[in-house]
Amino acid sequence: MRIDVLTIFPEFFREVFDFGIIRRARLAEIVEINVHDIREYTTDKHRMTDDRPFGGGDGMVLKAEPIFNAIENLLGTSAKESYPPRTRVVLLSPQGKVFRQAVARELAGDADRIVLICGRYEGVDERVNDALVTDEISIGDYVLSGGEPAAIVITDTIVRLLPGALGSETSAENDSFSDGILDCPHYTRPADFRGMLVPEVLLNGNHAEIEKWRRKKALEKTEKFRKDLLNKGE
Ligand code: ADE
Image 1 (cartoon, helix red, strand yellow):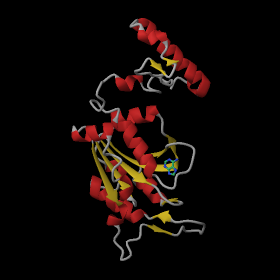
Image 2 (image 1 turned 180 degrees about the horizontal axis):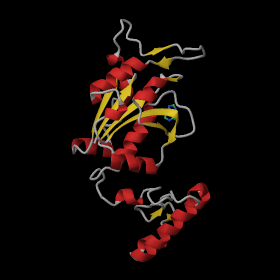
Image 3 (image 1 turned 90 degrees about the vertical axis):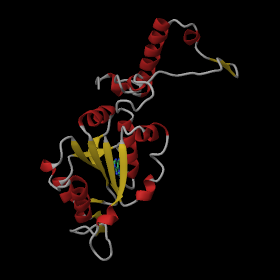
Image 4 (image 1 turned 180 degrees about the vertical axis):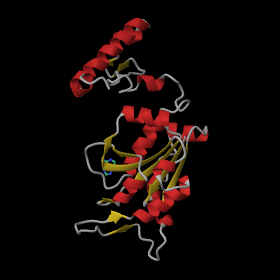
């Protein structure tokens, strides 16, 4: 998979993709991640990436032209109907569809090429949405200063789902949400830490018992913190 990030703050991403699973996946060429400065695609003297909103109001709006130029440069066209196959252009904004594990799975499975456009300020010229964007995504019901943290969240979530990205093929299957509920509690050595004991069942090697216990604990946690997950099977 190839992921391209369009941002006016490329420095924001300087090291975030250099650790752990993402780093390993990049080194193994499971994913290629490129960060592009939207300002590099301006054509005016002042290299302006934003401007005042038509109709008045507070804040600045990201201009269409540099983003169109960047997409044309990356994908060879600025008409979403003509994108190469298995290509998604995602606008990060609080107005988008809410990002969930199911959305991550869909993108990881259906796309080879993802361009993440980090929105900023009061918004992005709507013509970007109309002509370029295939998916508008929000990472949750809160407002960030820009889409950059969301691009990191989405990249991380998708990359760990790509075949071979995790050391063990089964690890992602046991993650929270993968079967619609939260993950169970985990423990490691020592079995007695300052008098706090690891549950006996985890020490006795009875795998059927352990699985039963894990499922029960996962359900208890889900019931306690995310009852909504139990009612929708997503
Ligand atoms: N930009 C600002 N807020 C955002 C959010 N919640 N998700 C994605 N992009 C954003």
